[in-house]
Structure formats: structure tokens, C-alpha cells
Length: 392
Image (cartoon, rainbow, N blue to C red; front, side):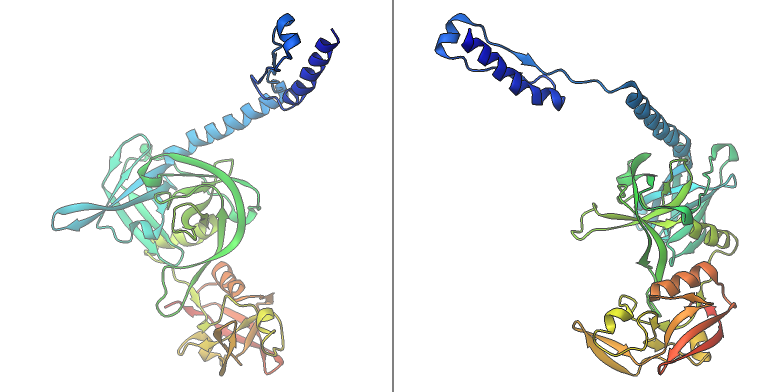
């Protein structure tokens, strides 16, 4: 009997961790001693999963219902865009992407890179209906936005509500809906990983241009998601999925979306004029370097601002007398032009980096607008007023 009591106690001790971690259907079968084997049957202890409390189940049900309802409301507005090009053999598929309806007039927002090479477009709605009566109204390679118009009956259109990307917070949950790899109506979920990112635009001639305020997300974005909406949990558009970054060249990576406030600013011009005019200052800078970094190599009068490397002739900056650099130094194995003016503020708004300057120009100014730059030259601070030109 003493042997049996010790055996039962040992079994109980082994079973307790299993019960604590809710591991289902684990069977513990102790190996009996020869004496116990003849007189006692095997002892089996089964750990039963602990059910969730009703409050927890209710919370899960609410979240499931929220996401399901969001998809049911939003997916009818998301379209599959097939890009067709004219070849000797006739129209052939060149690629595909996503887009979403923004009004009852048939306007559809997508990415510039999705449709820029198209001779003909075909749009498929979530109910399976197809329209090939689709016009490209406007393209903007700088922001990677485009606007289409599907000439269909308004009762076939379900517009989406546009949110406010300035209100986004890191950690906020977001949803992406699109057509990755041609798989229509695919929904993925994640969070806002970062805000205020800067991405190089597709346009590089005449200078290097950037798209500011880009949203970074870990919601899965793959080829074919481009042009689809990034949404908050209320189903409002907060961005347009546009790119992924991967060090391996694979599709998995970091996702980026053009913020919806950029859409609000640019899309009306694309609809009305077919293009959007960006204000232009006319300078170049080593925009991936901060002055604080460069100060470890050369003596600088300030540690934040935009160090002008070159002033483009015939631009607002040239007409205002801004100065570029006059000599090169080497920083971490690369040449950097120094000796030029340093812009520390625009209209009283302090600038830390070149990206800050680009973001201010895009958000707050337009062609023909006067701005005041605070400039440090030869260690002295001065103000320079100029009228912004048009980006070439």
C-alpha cells in the first residue's frame, strides 16, 4: 500500500503542470515496478482543457464580428484591375493590381505603377461583373497615384469613406484588402508599424524626388495588393497600399502605403486636370545624412537643418540667391559636398533633415506661393523670401 500511495502521489505531481497549461488529452502512464504490476492496473490521468470565461468568449466574438462586418461592407468597393497591352498577337495581359471606388461617378483610385503602361484596362467588381469601359483620368508618378473612371451605372458602385491619416498612431490596427497574385477579395490584418516614412518616387530625372509621410505596416502586402485600400477598423481608407521592401528579393517584407491625406490633396487635380503640380525649390542635398552625423567629420555652425549641395539654375532657389557647396569631403567612404547654405527653418517651422523640408513643401505649399527660409551662411543667420516654382 505504501508503494501504491507513493505512485499515486508521483502521478498527481506530474499531472499538475499539464492541468495548469491546459494541454489537451495528454496521457501519463507510469511504468509500474514488478511488484505493483502484478497487483495494480495502470493509472491514467487526462488533462481536460479549461474553457474560456464567457466574458472572454464574448470579446472574441465581437472582434470576429467587427472584422467580418468590415469586410462585407468594404469588399464591394475594391476592384481587380487587369492591365492589357497591344502586341502583334493582339491584346495581352501585362499585369494586374487593385483599386477602390471613391464616389458614385465611377472614380477609382489606384497606383500609378499599376496602370501607367496600359493600352486597355479591365475592371472586375466583387460580384464578378466586368467593365472594359474604363478611362485613365490622371497619373502622378511622384505620389504613385492614379485615378480611373469606370463608366458603369451608379447602382453598381459602393464608394469608400476617406479617413484622416494625420490621426494614425503607431500600433493602431489596420486592414488591407486587395487582389494579391490575382486572388480577388483577399483581406489581411496588421498594425501601423511606423508613420512619416519617406520613399523615393518613380521619377528620378532632373533630380531625386521623395514621397513623404508614407505609412509602414506589417499587414501582409504582396504583388497585386498595389492600389488597394489600407483601412482602419471603422472601414475608412487611411492609405493606398503601394510597395514592399525586402532584402531578399522575396515578396515578404515591410509594407508601405501612401497616406489618405495625400489622396485628398492630389486626386481632385488628377480628376480635373489629369496631373498635379508640385511646388519646387530647386536644391539638392545629401538627404540621407544629418548635420549631426556630418559634424563628426567637419566643423559646422549648426547641427540640424538642410545643407545645400547644389542649386539648380533657373529655379526659385537660384533666383533668391541661395548658395550650394564649394568643396567635397569624405564621410564614411562617400563624397559629400559642403560649404553651402544651411536651411534651418521654413515659414518658422524648424527643419532637422531634408525629408522635413520635402514634407513641408508637399503638405503646406503650392506653386506660386511665397515662403520664408531661415538660412545660415558663413555662420550668420538670415532670412530669404522666395516664390516657389513648379517641379520639372
